[in-house]
Length: 213
Image 1 (cartoon, rainbow, N blue to C red):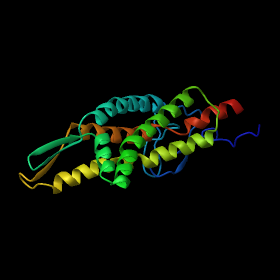
Image 2: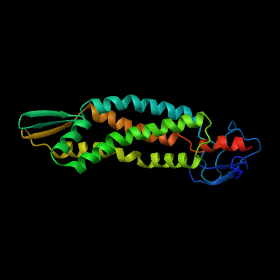
Image 3: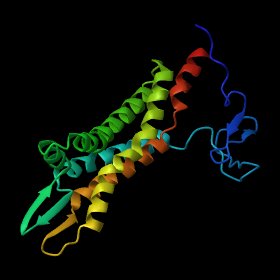
Image 4: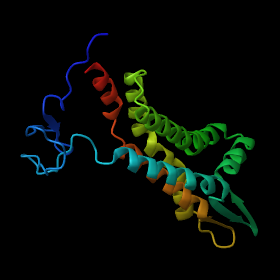
């Protein structure tokens, strides 16, 4: 098998997480000595500290919040004395039944499929790193980049609820109130964004480098 090019760590180089300056590390740098970037002063690490543990903690927290986010009502609509509470799924189903299928599909994929898919991908990446998997490292890196990029789009449903709550205040005619489900759903989105940021994709390549050594 063709050997991989030497990594920055093997060449005693550390990339600054803030300004991306490539810094020369002292001999036998193990992360115990505090080293700072000479340009911006950020603390340097060969890998993100406790990346796997932190990402697992955030992923588990997001999974716990994901259940009430989809089970509890996300908003309550009061119109002409009638009150109706909707979850994310029931709201998407309501839009679909009333012919607004593009909006229904957007809310379903952005608010249900994307957060769950992101959690599944992060769990897969975590397990593959812990098992020292050598399978398709480039594809796994692409998966991570996709996961990091699409996370914020899950906030579409929260934006819709926020706009409706702010705009619809018609007294006894119609009012819209955000419910507990919106809080849990917002927590899921924010936590998964942080989970993607704490995961270090360079860990995907570390096992391959060790095997080639």
